Length: 295
Image 1 (cartoon, rainbow, N blue to C red):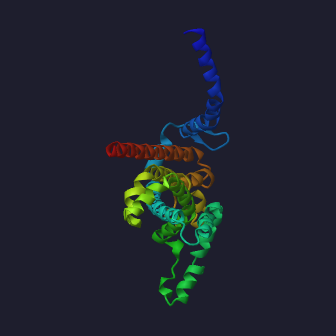
Image 2: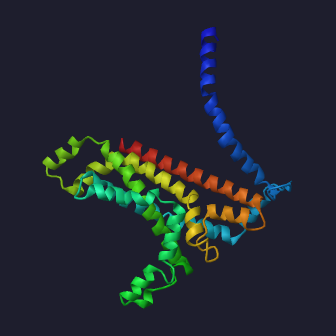
Image 3: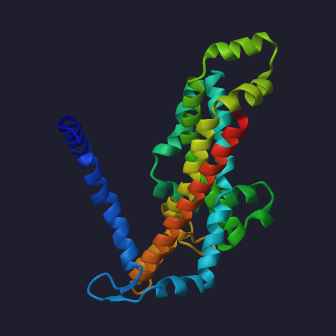
């Protein structure tokens, strides 16, 4: 290696060293620490006995883990719904329908509110004596006034509704950014050729923002596995039983509620990381294959 190349290599390594150091300190070390702790019987303080894969075996043998995992996949229902609604909202804003400036702020308002506050609001609205049941009683349908958070199907439905409501603004802004990158002359030409709203949507708009929709879907799936803790905590607290518990909330329960089973909580966190990584890679493979076919 010549002196010039050695000097360029040294400068390059020094240039990326800060970023590598940050990744090692704030990403690699915590992940490695969690993996190691998942192999121990750790109480968070002094007890740190190595037990191998016992935490993982104990988790896979429990019914609540599989029920919790099923809850996470059920929560996926919110992903396509919020993407479709966000897409419709972005199209209405892009077309500058009457009152679009007011609705632009209104749709994004839930995104700037704390997730815990949104959760508590939904818990109040759907409580037995809450506004939803009061409206049903006032409308002459008292039999429909039920304990929404006291049974699994309706409790999960309330959580999914909260997830959709809070994400409409984010999805709308994301899709609007994708629409703004399209040359307006494309839509003008389509209008001049007689293409109606639905034809412009399905034959022009959706194919041209396919990458934006892909990003939104991948991010939303990962978020559904890792970002539901404040909603579960404030709306249902995981109940009744484990009926609305998700994996990220189960990590919290194991770590801070059940005799500080931190080793088992770390094992659950590793399992959660593995599931999200596999799903993300799977979605990327499908996307790359679809793009190769379209080309």
